[in-house]
Length: 305
Image (cartoon, rainbow, N blue to C red; front, side):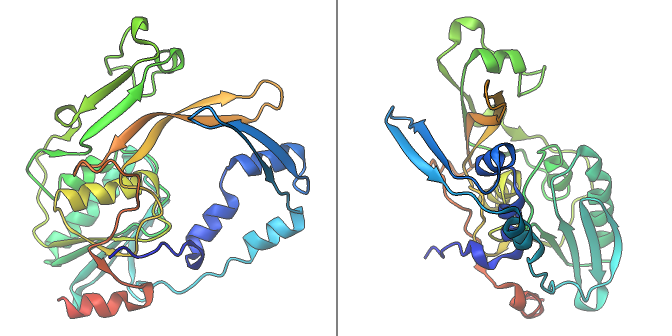
């Protein structure tokens, strides 16, 4: 049974939603936050629709941001061994548990701290490693390999398929990097695809973590973080614990940025669709293997020692 996403209950989601760089917020900041805007747009089926984006006063906006209540994390009682900008590593030998809280898939340099955490857990014989992705809004996929190198020696798919539309902007801006073999201009307007064989992780020679691996997720888990959850679940690399993700298992990506000529408001337009390893073509949240509320996490892990 699928549990509903109760986004409003999650403090990190609320904070992200209020402060994120949305189209509504761009209109407010460029044109005045207390103004209302009538927006006319065209749907993918070429229907012309209109909507009213209601404004908000600046005092009201910032009071909402400042009023987000911080709640006690279930792992705050575990001492921090080390932390850095994008994460914190904790270990409690007596409870046989190591926790890597990862706030953002920041940069390839994060792999240094990720490797260090797995090495420490293995050295100390900790049999349960918890990767906490609650509130992780995503970021780069460059750190995926750093995790999977400790979890499997098999070649595993990141995605079952990627579909992308060829456009002049895609060919000019090269969102996949310069090593990617792009179609020629004769294919502009066509849809191309990459299959699972070209979307795989190739095993690295790293020490495998031999304990049990868990990933925590919730309504604040988005983008590459929710895709990571789908990869772990579909390839049976660990168990997903918590609540359904805010982001999708199959999703859109590789956004191209366009600047509207008059207002100078930037728009992000996706140029690709990514389908999770199990082939699911529905854009739905990733459902955890076990539903556990934040306040019950320590009890859950104590029961499954």
